[in-house]
Length: 425
Image (tube, rainbow, N blue to C red):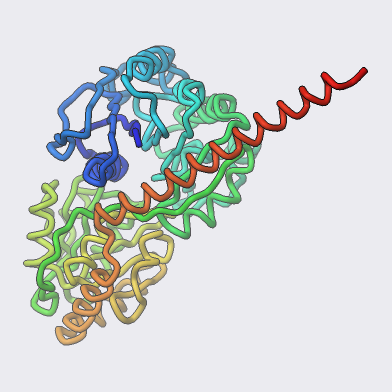
């Protein structure tokens, strides 16, 4: 099978690209021929170096590097992206059996969807976020610091000052979402959810489209090792962007109440505020190997306290794989992998609840027991790259088979109609 994977970057700068790169490698190792198309010019992850994997770069500019007006216009509809993608697909030596898109908001724009549909191959889109329905992409009211309950693109949604930047930025994103709805229309699109919560939540938000929903776990690039020793850890570790919607401020205060250090790995707008708090350490951005080392050396637990409906933060799975308890927000999709009270805690994103969970883990024996349970539970059914590739392969084969059957039935129906018409006097 020839699979085309389309993403905006070939080096992981976030979860979507990380999954795209690891999916490509896993599928190649599983025996498929993979073409990885990256939109933005730049380097490529070494994982993409494989005999059955080829790479094409469209050479587009990242919207964040462009002047504001040009970025806004290209974000709503980029004719350049559509033309370059169409050329790349037309130049393939082998027709793709399916095309899997992972991200489109930074350089590609809604203009690429008609290009993908015109190939005639089934099109899949992994929902790493909520941009398919929600203009600001996270279904979160930044003006109220709470999840959004409005119907996407309703009058109330359009009027809401919910964007993290400005009303003008929100209007640009509303225009992009309107263009997206027009670009996709009622064409068949397969959407892949990375957690059960996302599938349940997004199903009610996507009535404007003709979608087929699927569920596949993200891959986790972690080798199996002996369980960590969280009972010896001295810190609650937070890994990710330092923002209020992800709950970084909650971790700092809750850890202080529990008498533990709050160790933040990452960067973001709350960095200066957090640095001034007592009992806080900032490690800055770290490579994946360094993150794993920090978790094993320092973590009493990993905290994932998102205020927004996060789909599936990979750090939760990586911590469980290492044998580290996780305290996750009930709003996080990754919380479905945490067994409350056994491998960690699932709590509301509130200081009191987080502090209670951190306090329980202040007991070294309990942290140790939970870490061992987390390690055993994860490796009983690991989310490895091979497992991810196996599940994707089965999904692709099912979609291609069903499409072939549908086309054969349509051809037979047309032939039957033609025969009946010819027999009429």
